[in-house]
Structure formats: C-alpha cells, structure tokens
Image 1 (spheres, rainbow over the protein chains, first blue to last red):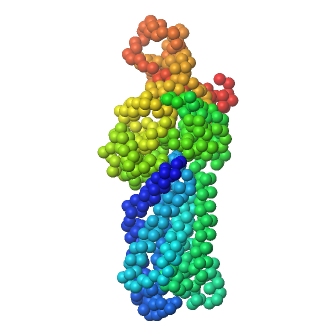
Image 2: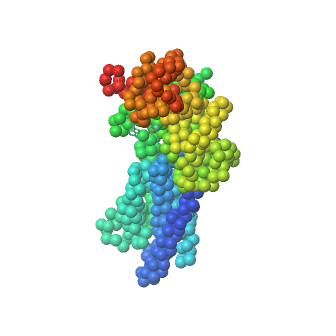
Length: 257
Length: 313
Ligand SMILES: Nc1ncnc2c1ncn2[C@@H]1O[C@H](COP(=O)(O)OP(=O)(O)OP(=O)(O)O)[C@@H](O)[C@H]1O
Ligand SMILES: [Mg+2]
C-alpha cells in the first residue's frame, strides 16, 4: 500500500471509531461524567472538607488529577475492548482482513480511536472539576505527555483483551478485577506516604500508581514517585504491548481460522 | 496473459484437525465467469476464504493476477472484491457508511469513496436505504449491500460465496443481469451456488469440489456434453400400479407416482410415447427431472461418495 493510501485507511478507522462512541454517547460519554461529578461532590466536597490536607493541598485539589486519570484509563481501555470485540463478534473484522491495510495501521487506528475517547473524557472531567476547584498547572508538558501515553497504553491493553476474548463476559473481567482495584489502590484518593512501609512497598509494584503520580506532578508539582521514572515505565509498557498486539494480529488467532 | 486466479496444491487443516482441503488445483482465466460447485461442507468457502485472507492456508500456493499471497499480499488484495457467505457487517452502521468505510480501507479518499459508493448503491437498488442501519434491511438487501461493498474499490476479480442464497426469483434474475454486465465490462467473477441453473445460466467454466478435492475442472460446454442420460418425468392420467416395461428405456415410478424415464442422448423420445400409447398409458404432462447440470452434478457427487466409502460402483 502507498503511504497516502495508508493515511486514508488510518483516518477511516479512527473516524469510524469516533463515530461509534459519539453515536452511543449515553453509554460512553455520559456515565464517566456522572460518576466523576459524584466523586467530586462526595469525596471532594462533603468528606474532603473533614479530611483537610493531603500532600500539602486541600483534599479536593489532591484527588482531581487522580480522578481525571482514572476516567482516561477506563475509557481508553473500554473503547478499544468493546469496539474491537464486537467487530470480531459480528465478523465485520473481515472487512479489514480482506483489505490491504497493514496490521500496524489497524492497531494504530484502534489505539487512536481509544485515545480519542479517553482524552475526550479526560477533557470533560477536567472541565467538570473546574466547578469544584481551581486548576493550576505546574508542568504542562508533563501533563500532556503522561495523559497521552497512559491513554495509548490502556488502549493497547484493551486491544489485547479484545483479541483474547471469546465471549462478552471476557471483556469485563479485566476492567472489573484488575483495572478498578489497581486504580483505587494507585494513589487516586491518598498519598502512599500515609501507608505503613510494607504497604508502600507493595504499592510500588502497581504501574497505575506511577501514572497517577506523574500526572499529579504535572498539575500540582507533588508526587510519591519520580515522574520521569514513571514516564520511562509507561514507554516500556507501550513498547511491550505493541509488540504483543502485532504478533497476535499476525497470527490472527480468534479472527482468522 | 496471467490468470486471474491460480491455486496449486492448496491444503487446509482446521484447528480441530479436520482436513477440509486435500490439495486443490484450480485456474481461473481473466474475464472468466467461473462457478465453484459442490455439496455442503465440500470446501468451497474454505478455498475462497484462503484466497481472501479470511482463512490461513496450511499448504500450497495462491496467486491473484500473478501476485502470490505469501509474498505480495497487499497487491493481491487490491485486485480482489469479496462477498462472503455469511453477513459480516456491523449491524448498527448505516448502509452508506459501511460502503464508504470499506473504500477507505482500500485507501480511497472519502470524496472519491462517496462517488463510488453512490454508483454501486444505485446500481444495486439500495440508494434510498443509504441512511438505514444495516440491521433494518431485509435479507436480500443485505446481500446486495455486501455486493456494493465488495465493488466499491472496483476490483478486477469479484468472488461471491452464495450471493443469491435466500434471494427471491425476481431479485435473483436482476442480480444475474447485474453480474453479467459486470463480467462483460471485464470483471472476472467466481461464484459458488447451490442453484445449478444459476451456474448453467451464467458461467463459462466450472469446478466441482467434494470432500476437499476437485472432481472436475472444465468448461460448462464440455461438462454438459458428458451428460449422456437425461431423466424425464411424465405425469400420467391415471396413477400407475407399477412401472411399465419400455424397451430401451429404463424407467421407474417416483414417490409421487409419476413415471421417470431415462433417455440416452440421440435416442429420441418418440419410441417412449409409441410404447406408452400401445400400453394404453396416457401422458398429460412432461418435464425434465432436473436441469442438466444438476443431473451431472448429482451423478458425480454420488460416484465420489461411493468411491470414498470404498464400495464398488
Ligand atoms: N472453523 C472451522 N473449524 C473446523 N472445521 C471447519 C471450520 N470451517 C469449516 N470447517 C469444515 O470444513 C469443511 C468445509 O467447509 P466449507 O465451509 O468450506 O464448506 P462449503 O463447501 O462452503 O459448504 P456450504 O455449501 O455448506 O457453504 C466442512 O466439513 C466444515 O465442517
Ligand atoms: Mg460455504
């Protein structure tokens, strides 16, 4: 395929993905907005006022970066896993398989589609948070970099999940039993310095902790971990998951007999 | 001139160990209208699936307009349009979006894709449904949508796996006319069908496949010439108790009580009627039992089954 044709194919996939999640916006865009608003009201306003400060900031300001990140992670993952799995399920994946689009374009297209939703949600949640707190950005490049890379990483994760899934149940196992616990324990609501040494150590093996903290560093300038280590780690994971995804596409397991 | 499709020694063993293809050789010339025939489970969809990258082959070679799918897959794909046996579009997407998106996958810019999508949706009588989600189309419309989608990038080789399954007679005829026109304009067409009259009406060359092997690969004309015996069904005025003796013509009673008479090529029918007249049997109507290709097909597949089961013919 020529470069120009590949660009067209890539755009086609991304536009199709955006069309999909905007068409079903009550399922894709509305729920995170509602949930996050509830978090802001309950944890930030009602309970937060009793908690006082966390990491040197009032509780509301402390949790906003974590909540934005949580929404971005969940949405990026959910978009790719449900879209790609339903393509597999309805066999419309065959439209791509018969066409000359190279595998890496297919992957890039789906990942960017997932990022479009993840980052879109991130923006919505950020705007909502402005109703509750003032947002001063400490380090803009850090904010942009972490949120983009994290979104890409979880979109890749969703892709692998979709490739492996054989039934609809399989696409909710990872979000429910892996992503949600790791996010809650990833320092969204607290600084791990509150934890006993042992649990601090355990928390350090949770990759989401690094992403939440790198993002929080970008906004507030405070972090439990070195934000540059966090960025490096995200990049390593992205490289790893990309390699796995491309390998799966090449072998075609679950999509080609 | 290179062939539109060349298949050599193609084998396929599915994940469960089933040998679906046991060495297929097949050539389709450019500009041909080719039928791949065979009973259910013969391996037709598997063969075509491999050509279109929907199924991974186990062994053998496939070339599309000379492009080997192992080494020049993307060139091969650009020349191919596929209408699969099962519906395989996103049920929630709109007709127009489905077709333009497919064009995009082939690298056709949106503006041009829209023109081409409109052209084929109009030709296939789906233009007024362009904003309808696919799930709200009737079965026949879904088939036509798949044809429009397969043509949007104007492929040189169009592969149709049972395009007229579940399509009413009138629509089937109009699809025939459409395909014939495409073929006249230079598109090579390969189709599978269980309606043998369809293959007889449309195709120039034919391969018959059964149990993963090609039984016959020849022109339709040659195939029909091999048909020595034709069976006629005669409805008699009174239902016969038993089949009459007809000298030179083997005959039997069908389950419905009609008289089935086998007539060899060149024998002529007059002597059948003379003998029936003599025996006082009055014939009220007559038809051929099946169309000619069908008869031949059934014989071949039956013979193959006997050979496969090891019994003497
Ligand atoms: N995914 C699969 N896994 C295992 N066996 C399969 C698979 N797909 C097809 N087969 C088997 O391979 C054989 C050939 O199937 P295929 O679909 O090619 O037949 P066909 O000629 O297209 O039949 P039909 O006229 O019914 O469409 C069948 O016996 C079928 O059961
Ligand atoms: Mg089939």
